[in-house]
Image: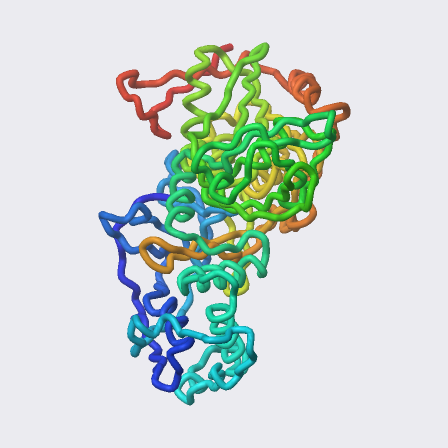
Length: 515
């Protein structure tokens, strides 16, 4: 995700006026949640979020699916002109489309927000006006029928009047939007200001979790929460020390899981949501949806073992390519092979996977993207493949997903790397982050990606070339043994050209082949 100036939409956003005169005050205020939502559509190749110096999410750029094939650019080792595509999210592609803004031209006064009800337990249906005004009934809302809209308004009014606790309209409509999106699939969601900012922060280097630590206690036979960070997402939702943790998303927890497994499942792309099932000391279980808003920097761990660089890549971010090069430079020793550990990697920015693939291959197809509204699009490697001479083994597990699967499948298809471990997760969908305004956005699944040869990954995963046995603690050694058989040179040594430059760029490395 790169910074850019705001470009106004080529097509004007047309307001569709919904008059309110025929609505009774009892539910009129419920429509105010729609009053300031604007969808900006742009027919050009890129779309930008409204630039505002005071907004933490200003100047974010998205990439359109409707561009031509991305190809090499005279060998320039630079991918800065490819806007990041985010994932689980994870993949940032803007689908250019025409969306009509809905604006309430007439609003009810503030004092109509609360309607007294002397006897809320008595069914007085004549107080609930579910008639749809003619002005609303004639508005084109595609598949939304007037009857459906009438039912929705009636439910909002019923909750506002009858629910045991008072709830404000902003909360109701926020919940309605979240529910609508999450029912589509597990990756779609409504991003409030905090989640939107955290997602932006993720692309620049942060990852997030929900702010808890857990330990398996054999005496009770459960994973028990031992620490809850103050004011973290978990703390705000009432999760406490001593609670049992039973499940994270679709993964049920038992004694066979390792602490690292739990940590990786709870940690992911900052701003994304995760469902956890907990209970109070084994009593009634309940599900809580949390956003990974407890942010902390991601670090790429790199170490050298017998001339082989072991690179642990937790997620794909805008900085991943440069961090890999920096970490290889910091080794200050010849490297004769790369073991890229993608275990527990949930994905991230898709173009980051393309950038990392460009370290190993030149002018090569990485992934194909297919949306409902555009032709099949191909993303290719670009620039100088500085790691091309080195043999590569990629280590994956069942939690390796999305952009991690893009990289693994690409190098596997081109016979550039040996994939070892177990079958990966199988997340082959592309999410676009579409801004609603300066502080809110929708993360929506807009496409599927396929391997370079057109094979499907979604719900299938990447099949390893070599299935490893034993526990995951033993996999690294097995992978190293396989890689050693492929080493044929004394390696590459990476040095930084300008030691005074603390910000290493893609073009500021000199690599020297040592024989």
